[in-house]
Length: 189
Image (cartoon, rainbow, N blue to C red; front, side):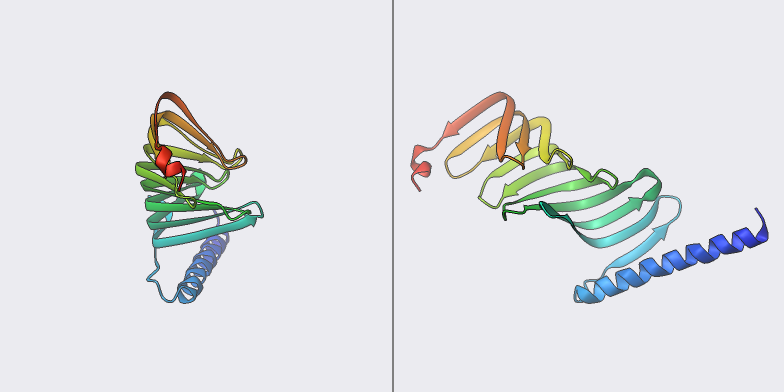
């Protein structure tokens, strides 16, 4: 590589890094100075961020937000990794689902999300789900797992193996070994 090409690459790389730093400085000031820390590790991740917050608003049918204690982005793999992650999916009709877990992965090209470790899903209507692992498919607008899952709301408790929750048609399916307890008194409330 010629000396001029190397200088140009270093120059543009420095400009890109400076732009990212300015962006995070501006976002930090908009968030009231929430201690956003940016660290670049060339051998592990392209960017590592503490107290991460991101909102995706490009889809009129669905807004999703990601909050995490830590985030690492690997551009070449199109992957963002999260520690202590919270993902809120809000549909155009106002319904929302909050998914939390110890770890998360976002495929930045497909917007698919995996969450693992003490996973919880809470709907704005009071439904609660618990499992060890789940996946959100952005193209299908579906949250699903093949793991054991528990589900409860004001009128029932259920557990089973595997679940699919369609955000499009609000349909929840427990896939196998289903055990349900219905509280008739809770249905009258």
